[in-house]
Length: 619
Image (cartoon, rainbow, N blue to C red; front, top):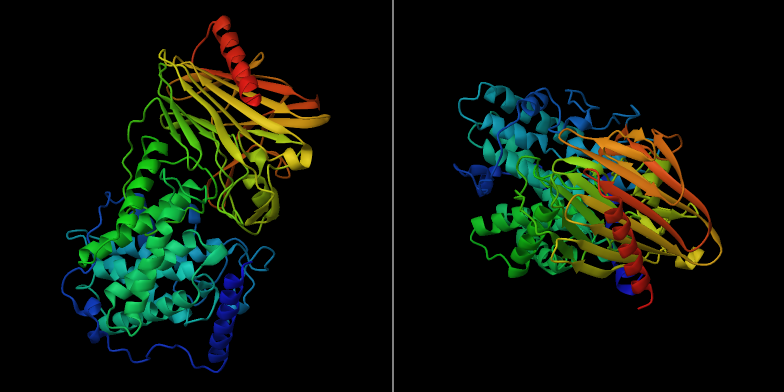
């Protein structure tokens, strides 16, 4: 840890100690108890103060969920009740989180309460934005019901969570997302509020208390990441929307400075994210977009670095998304949004070239030209953002393959952050990805649920695109060199006519246990030595040589055969595991076809890839 960061952390701890003392003495909140909301233009304006956001039509099931007290996304399985414990009871364990000074609450792995990420989601209050949309929709028969639910939930949260008290103040980012959400919520229904004095005073106190806490506890230095962007965005929101507050100018200035200075760091030159998590890239891209729109709407200049970062990230996300806008589950994802699923920044899916390489983030995309539309994504990027690599997965040289909207080879996702350490370790580890594990080790060393050591270096070595449509890629990583003395090389070939070939070459000394995993997005049908993968509109055939086969579904003890399509949800899938134990070098060869391919074509493709790998190794 550098001296500058050390002193900053000491200063932060001293500040928290002061807050703790004030809390014990009953000297909080730091904001006025009798705030005059009429001082604030945000509370008295007759029209919207925030820019209009593009939104999709409200899904009727989502509408019914939020009207019944639920959250927009069904996976969270939470319902608000007009009870004092509703914001603090863990939905999985049933245990109540303590209501004491936030910094004294144990929330990391091994805490006695549960996964704090699940507890935090309802308290982001983003469901209120959806309720606000319903309440603001003229002619909607549920307007009054939505407004009543919105006001009741907001006041319930305020009453149950005094400033600095309880788990919802542990994370400055959670405070930031809540601040942004309530501003958007009440901007939509400002002329309909039934108890304006109580609502507006509570809102003013929440914004001022949250912004002051965020300013004091920003995620800086080695903690820089998506948290930092959310916190900076919230400071800009508070400063721009509530200029009457004493610290407003400072909040806006600091927030904008952080956003501008981090734009080129968090969003790389090719538009990818430094944290190597596609969901978190979308998250910060949306936050940048929301903040830029806010600044422009209020006549502020938007720094060019921010606008460029927004354009880069949207272009990257468009290239990675399927035709429904879904992103592959690369790196960590907690299924959280900058605002809501409906009010996020739109990412228009673009038609890609046959081959696109994103050198800074380390991904290549191949669009097949066969009878059906297939896309392969090849990961030859880094582990993530140093020094902790918190949201990266040990997935070097992994691939994902999809047919339009339907997965063929999948990245199994994230599942959980805490509460189930063995599953956290599995889902971010190498065996949970479509690549090769050596000696039952990950490509890097898991130190904590959010920290890696012995990071690897991965690089694209060769990239060729022939006139006949054939594409070849060769990449390697060194994650096993220091611990095992093993290099992993992978070649990928698309012949442009429905054939995909993947060759893995492991080089080194001595005998090693090698394990190639293919996580299948479709239920396989075994036909001899091939695995038929039938889909809605087509079927693919997969064959793999180089070891013994084992098909795993819903394996025990985090051994394989699982995916997570939503945070906290674990579902069975089929994993084809190909094992070899012996001396090196060794090859695995995998072929995936849309239809029968002439054997000579297949053998020629294998030979070409092996030759290109040998050529790359000698240069």
